[in-house]
Image (cartoon, rainbow, N blue to C red; front, side, top):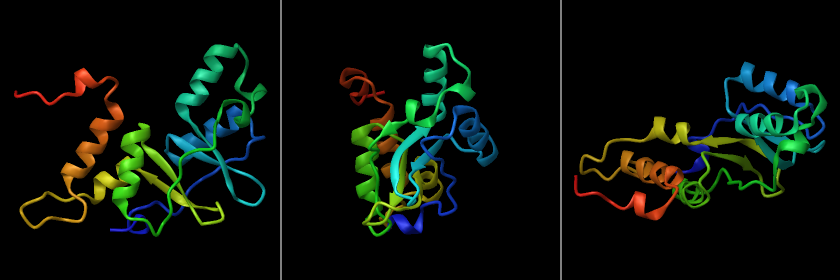
Length: 158
């Protein structure tokens, strides 16, 4: 299964010079938790999450309208490509402990977003038919994302 079959194409994005109040409004109206940050050519230069905004505001004692997206975003985000196999993206999510990947062209232009929720909604139960994307695939990825230390993540016999 390809990322293009699952990704969200109508993705909102923001610019690095947008203030955090505007970015927060965009997150709210788009009902999402992250925005790709794009330059004037629509190339992805970063990603900002609701958590990034919270941390920036909580640690700087400034108004959201006084800080820019560039001051709070993660630069050089991990990305994926529409033509890649979904399992490649799941590996990136699991290894990097992230739930969202901007989908870009070979030139880095934004095409959409792939979120763990998108993957979950497309997964199927493995009833012996070996689906391309199983519940087991997404559960394994989510366990990798949410595991903070190896001893806690070891399989339990219970």
